[in-house]
Length: 404
Image (tube, rainbow, N blue to C red; front, side):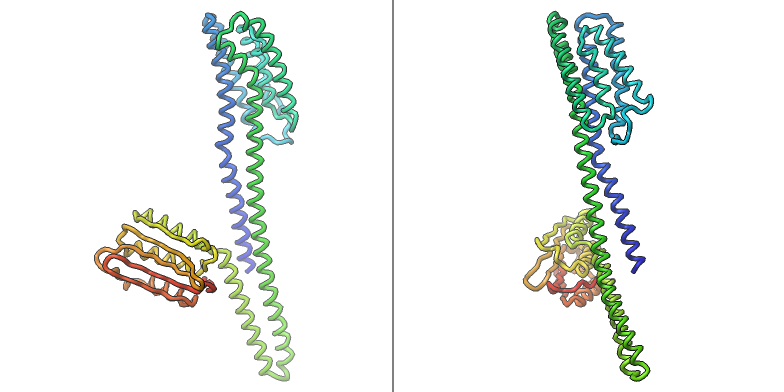
């Protein structure tokens, strides 16, 4: 029993690990959407800068320099953006010289673009954009982006009275507006990622807590079951030891009772393990439908609303065996599965088409096994055959004990 519990615990740990991995993979797409949005806005800024220079008739050399510096700046901002995904409060703001390139590239692009386009707001933006991407402590980034946005708005007002007053083309206006709002857009995207990541960690913690609670419940059930029976066995053996010298018959009776108690403990442990290993009957029926459909059969299942209370240990193997029987002997056009409950019985029915006359099941023992399982649970098996339909009906009492 200890080995079984250890295997169950290790299996649960592995399931926790796989669940955490699936959840981490599940938010990867969200991260790429967020990062791509920031990159697209930066690329749009560089593109508008080049477009504004082309529209104003600037020569190809200054336009090419601004475009090249803009692309280098964009590529260097990918480094802090990539690191942001794995950031923690324990990581320092600047990791050695890792972020020196984005800051230098931002300064160079800001000077070149700001001087060439004569926009103060564009000159300050690349440096501020690189700053908001750093690993600031919680709360600091919000204050930083507010200050950066206020500065950019002030510079945009200055540009509107100077450069934009003389050249109010659409590209220039869009460039000034995008330069003003880009840090706020970037921080909003990073904040959204923080929210998604926090929700993902909460889901992982909830899954682990549920698994831990399930293991605790199983440990409690095992302790109660084994503790009760072992205590009874110990008392019976002690009584047999006392009775054996003077009354051997009474002592042997206590030994026999102790053996019965051991058998009950063993059966109770087996039933407990079966209950934890059993698959819900609704899932068994869904798996059967998927298997039949994969074989090219038009399969449907009708499941009652209270199917969770059905004896899965008894009817689960019946579902699997009858599904195999339908695959082997059915015509392959259609199969219908039904699980319903009356006041006192559970009724499972599977019907499928047949070809070439009634199916011959004499070559196997599938239906014999189904009949045996139904009988062990106090139920019945009914088989109906005609020229086109083969039906198997299994009924078991509603209070049937799982045969496992």
